[in-house]
Image (cartoon, rainbow, N blue to C red; front, side, top):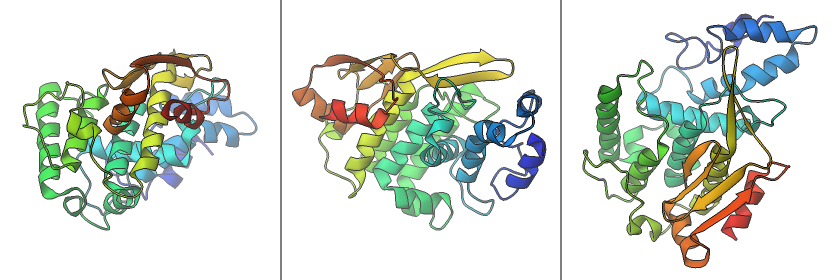
Length: 294
């Protein structure tokens, strides 16, 4: 089969089949994928298209009440990564074509962390409404913020500034706590103290905080390079990562990634305000996060 034929087989049940080609199956990419296939195409299809297909499945079916495009992409990105982490957090030998997805993943993970994985899945699938899951006030505030930022940038993708997930994560944190900021708040300041000291919102939150730290480490450690049809990203063992608890971020070759405010609050009580570490050869982000979390 060709990459396009696979897309025709896999893509129809998903949400965006009537409006967009399947992720990675447009532009010059299909021809490049086909050229690499050779006599045994299955491993090539897996490398290039498995993550993209799982991402599209994360958008669920067409008959659902979706959130606005940016958060819908964030949720689909997170669900795809949960199913196939190497599709985004890839080894150097097989760099990922989903090079720009970690900021989306961090925001989608924040939704799961703050409202629970089951609640996120049920709402994304359309089993329950987003208003019933997040609350009508939170949904309205998120949509106002998205529309405000979209009008400022006018991206064809209908996404706001995707390189700065911290503002959206902070807005979700405040919404989950019932402390929504004003619509014109830039959300650029470090997390307020009330976020660092709040109680659990649901029973699984603490486990998902450890995952959030691991994903922040992964986002900061990703190194990106260009190929003939786009960008490729991979986790490079030995990459230096810097923890800055004053700002609540981890920084590395992939840029800056925000940490959960409660994690920052706990670490500030017993760890240096700044620290550095290198990504180990096994690229085990969970073990690295556990070391930092003690």
